[in-house]
Length: 362
Ligand code: SF4
Image 1 (cartoon, rainbow, N blue to C red):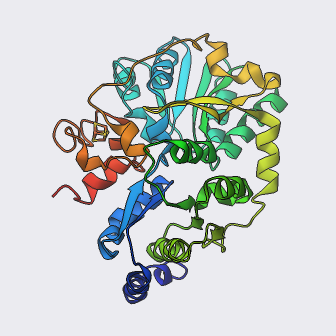
Image 2 (image 1 turned 90 degrees about the horizontal axis):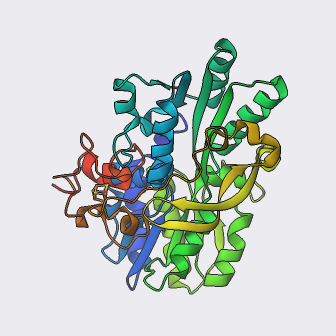
């Protein structure tokens, strides 16, 4: 397939892996911050192709995985109210809340529907003026512009029966938290290509300078990731700490300016709780005051609902690169994709699901 096969060529992959092996002289720990990249790394066995000196750990790059428990509980509470049509991407339906999940809520009679974009939810709101249509807006900076656009459009049309749970999280503050932790092991980051397509990579300048850490924005195909790893290893071995862009066919320094404009129009930056990790300063988006009528948590009055994480799930350590999914005692036994204990085993982008799917436990 044109434009895909050339990024999956095994001979080129082998050549890049050999280049990395020739360059490396000591141990390095690298982290990717995107669930899509985690899955490519596992699916193509890139972790096994690298020299033993290069260790890959997996960051908080799956938005479903970092959506806090109480947010899922709030979603279930709202979905269970009479007159509500609750809409969400399919992944979120199986994410466990403290008591149940959205699938179980649907089995109990809640009108929970899977949609493929927030504009589908908006269409449902237009078609059902006697119902409250709520969209579960989860995601990083990548999906946030489409959700912002849906809210902007709803306001423009004067829709009274549409609202959104805005559960967006931002990547740079999470990287900052990891780097600032006394237990941090990460020495270089593969930057999230999709997020940077929207936001550019100007935001990472500060992190590079402050922590003297190399960051290479990477794509999603096997050769993209191998090349990004080679660029990181070269920087580390040469004592450089710079921001570089491997994914230049999609990402530029400024990013997508119209998308950033709609984000600023509808959302404001706020503190946000991350599943297992806790609150991170300025790490999320909430709807601006002008759009409060579309904020489902305010509309339904559930802002104060809180919940505790299950003790057995070590996803907080996995998401900070301190443990691998296979280090979790529940992995593959009490926690499987069919019966997940934590969100990283549910989501198609979750690190635990990737390790399970690609047999890293076998
Ligand atoms: S294997 Fe399951 S219980 Fe363990 S960290 Fe992953 S999601 Fe949590």
